[in-house]
Length: 265
Ligand SMILES: [Zn+2]
Image (cartoon, rainbow, N blue to C red; front, side, top):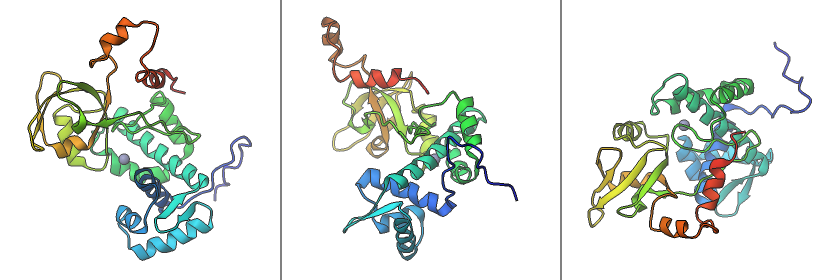
């Protein structure tokens, strides 16, 4: 029977949400970022529950001010719902970072652990983990970590499948939900931060030959479509122009260098 943590007058504790509520808000956040709204059937698929129970929970969360209904399309998060979802996402991604960075977990085994711990760890533990890691901006899969205030910075990106032949990009991000894909990517050293060059592309959606370090792995277009990359400002045909005009910064490179330079906290 511990007294609730009501001591800090500056930061009122967020309302305690149950584990299912946190999972719903997180799933709706992810669907909303992809499709603009979350349909009941998609929420049911994402959480592996029956559509009927989604309908009940969604009605409850809307009554409590976490969701708004969007006619014919499903639901969207209210600012309050978005704040709660980003809090869970922050916890999840810091936990994954800590498990890989400090405890030495391989990146294909942290997601399930984080799914459980994200509901149980105290805010104090999460923030100590973040501090111990030097306040990372991205998790081991390259996903951006929202700030305590619920701000999440998405870097501009494209998929590896879209990279033109001869161009080099930096691996940015891959979904954390497919362990066998993550193990394969680790085998060919295609992990966030790695430089990858598109060597050749077979016609008619055929295999892609990449260069990563000394190796030239061949991957399918389906795999390449799941890997996000960011352009490298120092390569590509525009770098010569940029050198010739020292007075003007190429506009495409400006937001990128800004986001790199921004302090970790
Ligand atoms: Zn995860």
